[in-house]
Length: 232
Image (cartoon, rainbow, N blue to C red; front, top):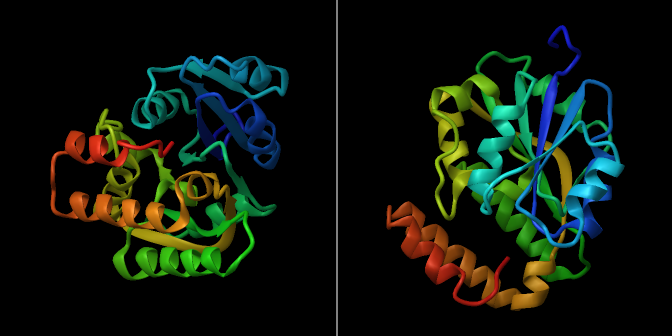
């Protein structure tokens, strides 16, 4: 832990997440944790709510998760940075799980096990698919609360302003720097995108976009296709 007492900096990108931000801040309100809300000019009062709820830092950045993650990392005081989606909840003990994993100097970062806040066999099947993608493919996504040693972000020169898959860029940097730890400790994320776009349609959309990433297609091209219908 640093002399200022910050062991982990949690970066929370937001855009019109006033209804979600209280839970995101509540689950990360633990000793040794700094919470940085990076807002993209929300129109619903997200920034004001985050300040009212006493987030340690509330800053503004250009829209887009890559811009927001980079801005948040540059404001971070801790030696470990954890990127948390506003609609994703960490369970008690999450910080201990992160620090325990990083006791191994070979571990450069990692991710949590994903659980959807929705009932039904479809979501349990999705969770199994996420586990296989993470453990066999080494490709956890940002909604799994990626954590990384700050020096890894320094080495990659920060997070490039890409329109999609900025989370996988961080994952690849972790693997270049050391080992990727996949924790059994769960995080819980909203299923709102699947509800809005249709479960099967969203699964196909995700997998097709991932294929484009693995084939090294232009990110702008992937993003235009992915966002052709609302998928925020």
